Image 1: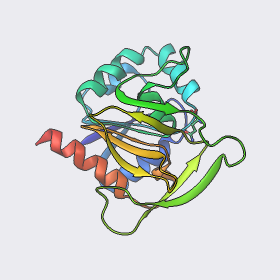
Image 2: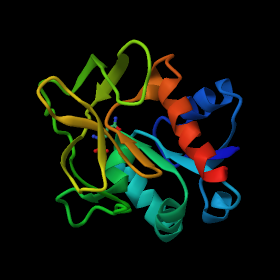
Image 3: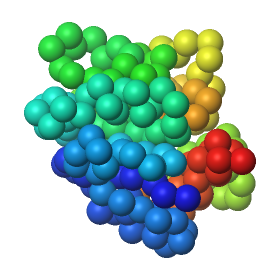
Length: 192
Ligand code: GLN
């Protein structure tokens, strides 16, 4: 199994390290041809406007869109924003692959970063310690989307739509490998 991590900006090295801890071959992706031969892709957190701008400059928008149409793709934080169909901002380049509406910077400046324990559907064991940094939330989902986790106030922070996964927080900034293993299992299903 070979999984790419979009390495234009943001926390890509941390994702690569987590995948390698799971003994999965992980490669950094900066150019369209580097998507060839990948079984899955992670789009990291960072700054979605920067990721969108660089992806446009490097001719990656269409190749990434096509990739996410047929292969497992997981967006964390800015990556979730980048995968969404609707973020309410026309000018910002996004892939639009997932049938979710996302509110960027949903927590505002006062509590722009926080950590909390989440129950995530499909993850066995203790709650997942989730790190939120200027995080988005999902404000609407289409029928094909499964909600995997909510905050105590009901706001949606993890979703799955078939082979597409999106989380508003940063699992690559913890030592918990369960979500990476969960994504690898989705990839494995598509290879079977
Ligand atoms: N607020 C950032 C954005 O809009 C996302 C923050 C993050 O990825 N930690 O892209």
